[in-house]
Length: 436
Image (cartoon, rainbow, N blue to C red; front, side, top):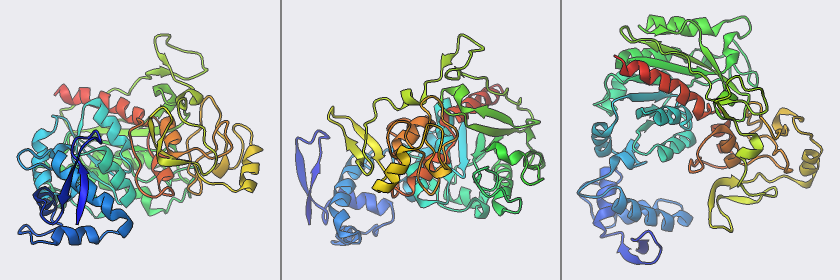
C-alpha cells in the first residue's frame, strides 16, 4: 500500500511512502496508542483499512503529513497538535509551553468562550465538552488544548489531574453551561436538571485550586417561572470560596463590535487577596445609534460583516468553497430548500417570519437561533444563512472551522457566546490577576 505525500506544501513535489514501513507514521500512531509500541508489519495498514474505503486515501495522506510536520521525532510540536487530547506524550509536554495565566474551560462547546480568553492573553490548558462534533471543533481551532469528551457532572478534579498531572491552580475556570432551560427560545422549565449544572463549575474550580471563576449564560436565567437563578449562582460561588460580583454583568454584543442585539450575563468570582475586576466598558458604538462616546469605533452593520462572502443559491456551496479569486471560504454550504420553501422565504420581510425562518435585517440582528437546526434567513437572499455567514455575524475569524455534519454545525455557532464579549471580560480579569 503506497500513497503520494506532498512534502513541500506547494503541491510541486511528492514522495512515495509505504505505510507498512514508514517510521514517521508508525512513531505517531504508537504515541497515540493506536498501534503497538513494538510495531509489526501491517499494523498501520490495518489501521487505515479500518476507516471507510472512501476515506482511506485521505487518512493516509494526512497521517503522513502530520507525522512529518507536527509529530516529528526530534522536536514534536505538541502545543500545535489537534490530536493532543489522545496523546499522553503530548499532554505531558504542553504544560511547559503555556503562558502564565491559564484557563480550564468547562462546557467548552465549539470554543467561543475560550477563544475570547485566548485573545486576551490566557492559555487554555484543558477543556471539557460532551458533544463529539463540538469537541472536534474545539480541538481543531485550539490546537494543543486537550479536550476531554465527558459530562462535566461526572468529571472530578482527581480525574482531570490524573489525565493532566501538571494541572494545578489554574488562573481561571470558565464555563458556559447549557442555556436551554433558561432561554426564551427553550423550555424555561424550572425543574430542568440542566439549570443546576453551574454547581459543578464551582466544585471543580475549588478542587483544582483555581484563582477565579467565570460563568456565562443567557439573561433569561434571572428568573425562570418564579425561580431566581442569579442568586443561586452567586451563592454557589461564595460557598466554593469565591467572592463574586454582587450581580452578574449583562453585556450587549453590539457594544463590542458584533452586529447583534444579543445580551449575555457574566458571573465573576475571585479568591481572597485578588481584587474583583471592573465590569468591561463598551469598545464600540452600536450601528445606527447615537454615540455616547465619539472616540468609540462604530459596530459594523450586519450587511458589512457579510461583505466578501459569495452569493449562493439554495443547496450551493461547499464546506471548503474555492472562489474564482482563489480564496477558500470554510463552512459555506447553503441549506437546500424546495421550490415551495424558497417561495415562502421570498415572501418574508426583513425582521419577519417564524423563529425557524426569520429573515435577518441588514443592520443589526437579534440573537441568532438555530431553529430546527436551520439558521435564520439571509437579509437579501432567499435561503437560510450558511454556517460561515453565522460565524461572521458572531465574530469568529474566517479560519475557524466547524466540524461534524452540516446538520450539527448551526447549533455550535448559534449557541456560542460572541468571542468579543468573553474577551472583554477576560481582559478585565487578567488585570486583577496580574496585580496580585
